[in-house]
Structures are given as structure tokens and as C-alpha cells.
Length: 480
Image (cartoon, rainbow, N blue to C red; front, side, top):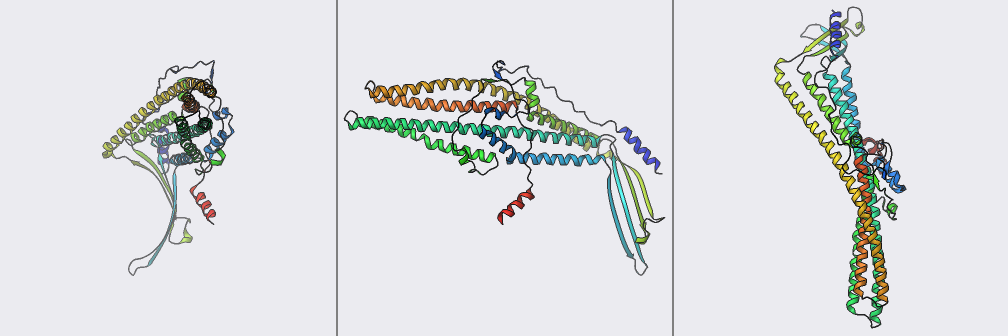
């Protein structure tokens, strides 16, 4: 009686060598051999290795410190880590379907019917149930969970790319704003000196109130730039603090001292589009979700076929607790169950069509991710190249305008030009120096955008885990 179900189970295990539904095959992703915005590889800095930390190349200890803090404490990263941990837990749970489910129960009853005798019964049993994965429903389900977990891990890596990129961009924005603030204050000081000279000429009877008013108006216009730039500096400091998991005011003292922007490479070699697609975590996440959707087609398809379940029971039933497990009280059962609903085929096929549609949608999403990755990199390459050229030209213009303003003041002191020439030269100097500082900042941030697009140089690390229970306990201790 026991041998026949076991033989059927053995036969079912032999049949389990295949699984219904489509096997996942990585889609063909045609990509160009080279980027349209190709660079001279002899002059370009190579793409960072996958495990390199690109921000280290800037030799800025403050930037490195901020990035390290963000990777360890950024709350968006901790949210993504929680999702990844949850996906891993679901995967572990799905794998348990490979094994029998074992439960145990015990009952004790005391029954009396009418005036009849009292009847006592004691029962102890262990039950086992195991779905024989003949058509691969369990395997496809585990395959889908494994792909979901991989996609969640890729999402975490993609968010690391985004967070590190935002920290570096915000940091360079801060240094650029501080430079623009320095330029505005320095020009205001120069214009204050011009106003002083004009006032002295007026007092000596060689100037006019009209000249004084024009000089004062230009000074006040320049000074009006300072509060707006100061506000932008503070806002950027707040952003960096929150990115690193702190309150907005936490870094004001630390970041108050200005620092220069780093030297930038002439060009960066992004490698080939094929290499790029293998590095981008957002593309990897889209592919894993396509894999999961394909596996779920198999899960739905398995419902077209019967489900085989092997069940067993081992226990003891007796009229008193002391007689349990004694001779004659044992109970055993081995059974092979078959569950197959012929009348539910329409619903099953509807679920299969829905799973097919989901897979088609994930395929389109994956193909779109590939195109967006290529577009992102092409755009970053051209922006970095053009901002570098703009930076060079505006730097030269800033130098020339500063020299022109100096010469205008000298000539004004000598009486060779009037005040209008001096004011015009000073206004041009301010505009050129501010534009140069802005272009320099945009060059640095466009380099960060290029590194971000190439997804090179990102660490394989996890943010610090902190459970809600631990956080609540810490808050309670702090309140005491």
C-alpha cells in the first residue's frame, strides 16, 4: 500500500525534468559600435573600472567625506535596501515550496452523549504535504522571485549611482556659487573704490552729481546679487546635509569655507555602447523584470495541467494519554492527490494571456531602458565637450575684461576717458567673471553627469541597516 504512492512519486520526480512555459532568453539589443560623440582616445581619460570610486580622482577630501556619508546614511538608499531585503526574504520563502510542509497537532476530547458513558480520546499526529513539481510551477515561481530579487538589487545600485551623482553635482554647485559670490563681492569692492574716487572728484569740483549717481547705482546693482547668491549657497548646503542623512543645518559650518573647483580632464572615453549597457544598473533591472515576467508565464501555464500532491500522516490515537504510541494505537497514511479543474480552463488561459501581455510590456520597457541609456550617454558626452569649450572661452573673456577694467580706471585717473567708460568696463568685468564661474561649474557638473551616465566607478556596498524597532528604542532612550 505504501510502495505504490512512493513509486508514483518517483515517476513524478522523473517527469519533473522539464518545466512548462517559455525559457528566458536575453533579448537581442542592437547597439552602435561607437558613440556618435566619439572622442580622441589618445587625449581622453579612460572610463573608471566598475569597482573604482571616481570621486577620488578629484582629490577633494570634503567631497569624498560627503559621498561616503551619503552611501552609509542616505534614507532613500536605506528604503531601497529594505526593498532588497524584502525581496530576498520572499525568495527564501519561495524556495521552501521545493520541500514538504510538515505540521503537527494534538487533541484531547471528553465526550458524553445524554446519559451515556463518558468517552475520552487522545490524538497526536504529524502531517506532511509536498507538491510534486511535475510541470515546473514551483520552479518557475522561484525563478520569478530570483529575478525580482536581482532587479531589486539593481534598483539599489541604480539609486547609488543617482545619490552619488547628486552629492557630487550639489557639491560642485556649492563651490561654483561660492566663487560667484566671491566675484560679486570683489566687484562690489572695486566699484566702491570707483564711487569713492568719483565722490572725491565731486568734492574737488571736478565731477558731477550725475556721475556720482551712476556710480552708486552700479554699485547697488552689484551688491543686490549678493543676497540671492547667499541664499543659493545656503539652500545647496541644506541639500547636501539631507543627502547625507543629516538635518539641513548640520553642514553649514563645515561647508562655509570656499574651496576651488577641481581640475577637469580634457575628455573622457566612454568605451563602447555594448560595455555601457552591461554596466548600467537600470538596464540590468529592466532585464531582470523581463526575466521575472517570462517566468510567470510558466507559472500561469502550469495551471493547465494537474497538480500532484504527496501527503503523509503519522500519529497515534488512544482512549488514554498513557496508551499513545503503544501497539495498536498507531495511525499511518500515505496518499497521492491529483487536483485538476477541467471547468477552470477559461480562467487559466485568461491568466496566461495576461502574463504574456505583462512580458510584452516588460520587453518594451527593457528596450526603452536601452535606448534611454544610450541617449543619456550621448547627451552627456556632447554637453561635457561643449561646456569645456565654453569654459575656456569665458575664462579668457574674464581675464581680458578684468584687464580692461583696470586700464579704464588708470585712464580715468589720467583724464583720458570719462566715467561712463569705467562703469561700462566694470559692468563687463562682473558679467564676464560671473559667466566664467558659472561655466566652470557647469563643466564640473557635466563631468559628473557623464560619469553617472556611464555608471562607472560605483562601489558595491550597502547602506547601514537600522530597523524601525531599533530606531524607536533609540528615540525612547533619547527622550529619557
